[in-house]
Amino acid sequence: MYTQCRGCGEVFVIEVDHLTHARGQVRCNLCGTVFDGLETLSARKPHEDEDLLLHDFDNAPPLLTQAYHSLHVAEAVEEELADDGSMPAFITPEESVADVPFVAEKRQQPPQTSNKMWSLLAVAMLAMLAWQAQMAIAAGQINLPEGAVSDNLCGLIPCAQEVEAVDLNAISLVSRNIRPHPGRDEALIITASMINANPNNPTFPALEIKLSDLDGQIVAMRRFVAQEYVPADVLRAGFVSNTLIPVNLEIVSPGADAVAFEIGFVQP
Image 1 (cartoon, one colour):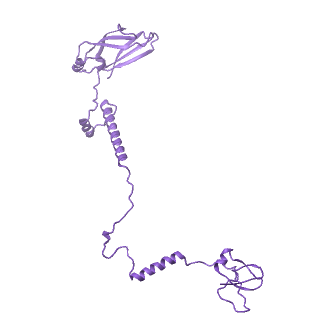
Image 2 (image 1 turned 135 degrees about the vertical axis):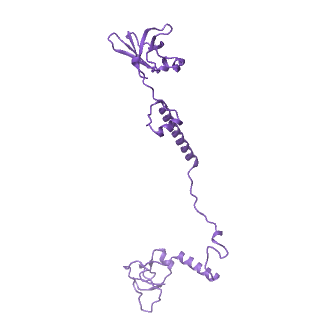
Image 3 (image 1 turned 90 degrees about the horizontal axis):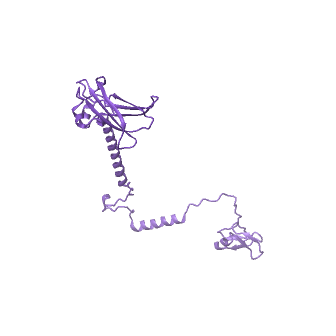
């Protein structure tokens, strides 16, 4: 490679290593001028009395297309092909596609335990809801519409039966009494007797006890169904007409304000 001093015009032989040391800056040993050796760099030796051409650096930088590593790999492949004389293949002719193992990414499956747990919880909640619905139907809190579906359902689970209306006008109170409980503090004993005049009225009514003060204001009230005041054997026999039925009840005293009481009959 050749370059020419910009001070005295002397042409020098220069190596590429000399240009890389100071980014192209060199010093002339004749005149001492420091100049850019790349400005007149040439691979051709000039003739006598001929100056080297001054390069124009205003041009756009050239595009480099020959990458060293890619060129090196391509040359290696060409050499290998030249040696084998055949194209490389992923599967040899002796092998079939079925013989080549297929490696795929294994997806992580969700844990089975959590799914089973949620399924069991859902089944338990449905069973609890079904049980609560059955209890509500048996207690009469849910009224089923009349029809074949209701009849079939009541054949599988217990349903509340319609209570026959009681003829309250046929029932009369024969006696009644209230006194303090002899063995318990703040407790009262109510005794009464009633009779049924209608032979077609076997159902016992519900008793309604009201306690009031001197002004007639109700201070306490309690309702008793037949199972709470009628013995079990009498309840099975029914409210036999013209038979005196005794009643004995124990209640908590509402206090000294309760000076009067009343017993009434209501539908069960």
